Image (cartoon, rainbow, N blue to C red):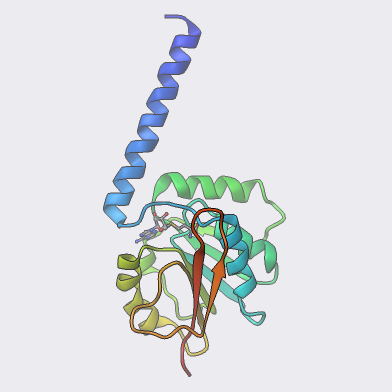
Length: 182
Ligand SMILES: C[S@@+](CC[C@H](N)C(=O)[O-])C[C@H]1O[C@@H](n2cnc3c(N)ncnc32)[C@H](O)[C@@H]1O
């Protein structure tokens, strides 16, 4: 077999491995690593309160939304929490190529174990079933005045402080903003 044949065989193996791991983590975690659009990332960044000191992206995927917030708010500490290995590694790579962003970090952790008490704002893009699982943790741990900015899924049983439509060519996205009552 010549070199080109070996190259395509390896490429197929890598793609098959990526596809298998994507399906595995989707099945294990209950949320696929589908990224927010860049317009939604910018809209979320614009909604972060100016007095926020720390923002956590719960399920940061490939890192786009956390990066958008870190770029827009260099004074805010931004942390992305992601458990699935391929998107986590990719987000670390993006961080490596953005050395100016000293305020951004990514952790490979289960978001359900990450403490939210010190956090000023949570951002997320989750399917509704995951938002339902996440809601009790948000209600229990976030301090009064903290903000939840959720792309697409609402917080069941709560009235948003504000909603924002992000126009798109195919499907408009809706962003929900909630504030923990004092
Ligand atoms: C729809 S993606 C959103 C990615 C990113 N926030 C964005 O807006 O582009 C949701 C991510 O949450 C991650 N996730 C789901 N459950 C998780 C858990 N228990 N711990 C950490 N990450 C989780 C998934 O792996 C997936 O990458």
